[in-house]
Structure formats: C-alpha cells, structure tokens
Image (cartoon, rainbow, N blue to C red; front, side, top):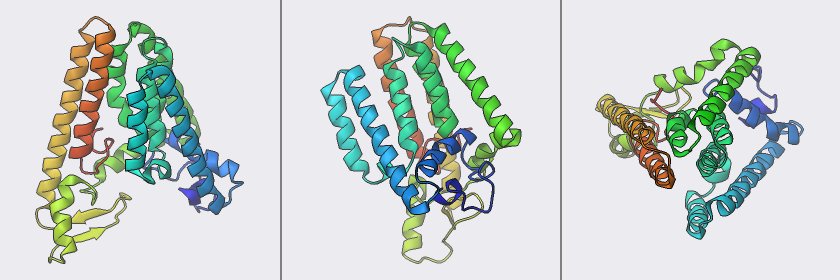
Length: 279
C-alpha cells in the first residue's frame, strides 16, 4: 500500500491494488499527499489519520449514542484489537457504518450516503444497506440518497480508473482459496505447523496467504456454505424489518440485526473478514 500510494510502484496508481475498490485508493492516497510521497513518513501519517478517525468516531458515539456503556465498549474493543485498529483502513468503513445507524432517524440522507461510501471502500457494508434503511422513518429519502451516491461513485470510479476496474475486487474475492487466518483453516494450520506432509502455505496471485493440503477443499466448501447461510439470514432479517412500521424499537432491532449478520459472516467465511465470498 505504501509503495503504490507514494508512487514508488512500477504500476500506475489507478491500476494498482486491484483487490480493493477504486474509491479505497483515494483514501490511501491521503497519507501519501501529506507525507510528500516519502514511504517512511507515509506509515506515520497513516497511523495518525486512523487515530483521528478513531477519535472522531468516539466523539460521535458520545454525542449521538448518548450511552457511556457504548463509549466504554468501544475503548475496550480498541485495546483488544491492538495495533490492527490503526494499521488497516477497515476502521473507516466500520465507523461510517456505525455513524450511519446513529443518524438514520434524524438524517436519513446522510445515513444512505455513508453506507454507500463505506461500501465503495470495502464492499462488505453493501449487505447492510437495507438494514440501516429499515431503521429510518423516511425510508424514501434514504433510498434516494443511497441510489444517488451509488451512481456518482460508480461514474467517478469508471471514468477515472476504467469500467473494468469496478469488477476486479469481486474477481479477487471469488478466486481466493482458504486463507490461513480463517477459522475453517485452523485444523489444517495446526497440522501444517506440526510439519505434517501434504500441507503448504502459499501467497498466490489472489494476494492472500492460503493453505493447501488434504481436506482443505472440503473445509473451504463448508466455510463458503456457512457464509451463504449467514448472508441468507441477513437478507431475511432485512426483509422482516422493512415490513415493520418505523419506530425506536426497529432502530434497536436493526442494530442487533447488524451484529447478528456481520459476526457469523466474519466467523464463517474463508478469509475471516466479511467481504470475502459474499459477492
């Protein structure tokens, strides 16, 4: 990421990191601009910007959520995650999705735009767009804002990075095998660590560490099936919430539904992250 964003890559900026959506590259370019394209400084600026995002979200959670327990839970979660909190830009999408739910009732247009922007950066919030929309009383305004933002984002990405660039993140996700960090890979990783014959860890063209060996294909298939079931659960809960009349209870239900949707997908998918194998 550093190499590409600072221009040290042999490839052009817009055609690099094709496993990420094009709008994500704009986010990654901000530290490059601030660091004057110096690779070492890029890392420090990246961490600083993630801390800024963390602080802004904590402030929004305090003002909009009005729950000391929520603030405490976020602080504890940050400590539990450790350096990963500020070394990946997933924090941006997570914060955007959370703020979208917080403002869904008073500002549905902002909520719709935030959900689409978050989807443009990391894909996975796309399956939650419906859940957040169910929480607002002005659902039509939410849908219009989300649709408008989607059109603008697609046109901007297609015209700047090329129309084929819109689909490359999907191909990278679907072509990946069983990644070493997934729960489904745990038994195989134990055998690999014990130097059992037949197991190997590679870094193929899919740009992820994957394990191969006896039974890995079956584990991957089970993992993919479990992810599909989790996705079906998300779609079902979304449909049920849209059938209900908007109310404070629906907002709370949408929050719990999001948790019950994301968590199983993270635990079940072959990459231990929600965006894989869901598109």
